[in-house]
Image (cartoon, rainbow, N blue to C red; front, side, top):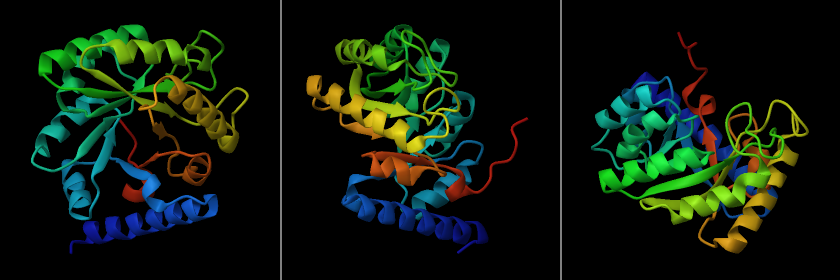
Length: 239
C-alpha cells in the first residue's frame, strides 16, 4: 500500500468512527448516513485511491476542476455530487457528469439544468440549497435560497423535465441567527426537510455537516455528510 493510500485509509477510518459514534449517540443505524468525500483541489489519483478503499460518493464544487476529474475517473463506479455555487453557463457541463447537484438555489438554474439534462439524456438529482443566513426572499452569502423560498423552488425542480427532487442541503452559516450554532442550524434544516417531504415524500436526502460539525448534522437527521479535509488533509491554498 502506498504512503498516500495508507494515509487516506487511516483518515477514512477515523471519520467512520466519528460517524458511527454520532449515529449511536443519536439512536440511528449507521447505514442511515452516507459519507460523501469532497475531493476539491485534490487530483484524480486520490479519487482512484478512495475508490479502492471503498468510497463510492464524491463531491466537487468547481466545474473547471470537476469535469476533467470525472472524465479521468469515468471507469470507476462512483456517484458524483456537485456542491458549489453554479453559474447557469456551466449547467451543460455539470449535467454531463454529476449525478446530483446539491446547490440548486434559483429558478433560472433549474431551467438551465433541465435543458442540459434533457440534452444529455440523463436524469439529474437536485437538492434545494437552503441559506439559513438569508432574509426572506433573499439568498445566502454562500448561495442558497431563504427558507421561505424552498417550497416554490422544490416545485419547479419536480416539474422540470430531466430533474428529480432529491431533498435539501445546507452549509452551517457564518453570519445571522445561526452563526456559530451548527446544531441549531441543522435542526432548522430538519424542520424544512420534514415540511418538504409532506408534499414530496421521495425528497428524503438531507445533506448537512462537514469535517468540523458532522456530529451535529447526524444528530439532526442528516442522511448525507460532506467531508473533505478530515479525509484528504488540509487543502492547499487555491491560486
